[in-house]
Image (cartoon, rainbow, N blue to C red; front, side, top):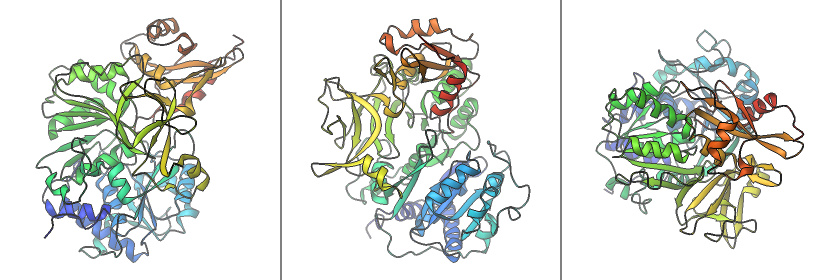
Length: 564
């Protein structure tokens, strides 16, 4: 019998992997350590329950959970039914939650009990659902919930059923769903930090290749061309730790990459804490660690420096970054801290999947880690390009700024939004491209230099300033723990570059002159911050992404309108 999944459907690939190693630990999250077989059995029971409630192909299952095995069970159950899981940000209040549930047309909901307070605020939407399940929070789980209901979930959520009761009452055994294929749908909600979320709709086959590694989690061999090759790439042991919640692509995609390869994923059960993360690395013998930008990398590095020799990190052979860029100075620190590890800084988005990476191999030292200024450089594959305003490839070495674009395995578009889809997904000379918001130049050697998101670009005196470039430089100042850069209204400049800074522990807050002096060697004068706003903590999403709306509000409140 051919040792391969039945199709590039994500349920088929998962069930193939679970059959190969049913006794292997699939997941570690707090005290929970389900095996592949156990995770699959519970997903089957949940699928049976959902099917009995009327959930089937094309239906949407909203998942409002923190990191927990139930998150993966809910996703897998949906895939088994050819339904579509919907990732819900656990920080949403009732208004945001209403938008997501209505946008996604969710007909089922799985929610942690401590998050039921926000759900009760949209009870009219919940009343129309075919199934509502409430998951008990495990002892020791924490988070920033908006208040629980204090009961069993039934009082405030009409028709709600305790999750474990539903599984106990459901029949055991596999769930057969006719018509499974790579054409089934996968949805990723994104964009909540810069506006209301939007849903990126993928085919399973395209998501498998573009988002989930295509059978190449370490991006060494290249995507498989035949599903039978997955067996050749199945690992004997791989322990993976993503420092992000499963509600975000940064953890969701990489977790499935390793589940499809036989690996074990270690999830952070509560809020991110640097010392607790190193405890997990040592206790579980983690091999691959993925962080999310400077906001996560700097505390991890600082804790190692503050406690030399406290943790055994010798099990690590790869350190990766994704979802938010590393500044060159922090990337260089990582190279020095883990000289025997492969360091990979990935580039991509929910609309494009994984587009490229900057990689430093053992023995390379800081080579390639300290790019000029605050601009990160990446190598990209043949389906990724930088297109100019006329949608033509930017000539390498020309210094022309263009938009990052990807072809090949790309999404169907934005769910239920044809206008936005038409603006982002374009066809040029018969080739369909997705245009990301990332602005870039292309070096003479073909590497892509990431400047930042065009939507955040600051126009100051007619010059364009990309916040991430300035942030990358300011992160190199020892007194800066975290920083976001925004523009504030200015009568002379139109918009003045403003740094919102969280001072580093043990350092006095930096002055504006100090930051400008530090940055002057790397940035043109018009890119230097004209204002400094010192805050106790820079706000970011649970995945470490910048909250520019918050930063702009804080800057406007602190900086008086200037006449230059």
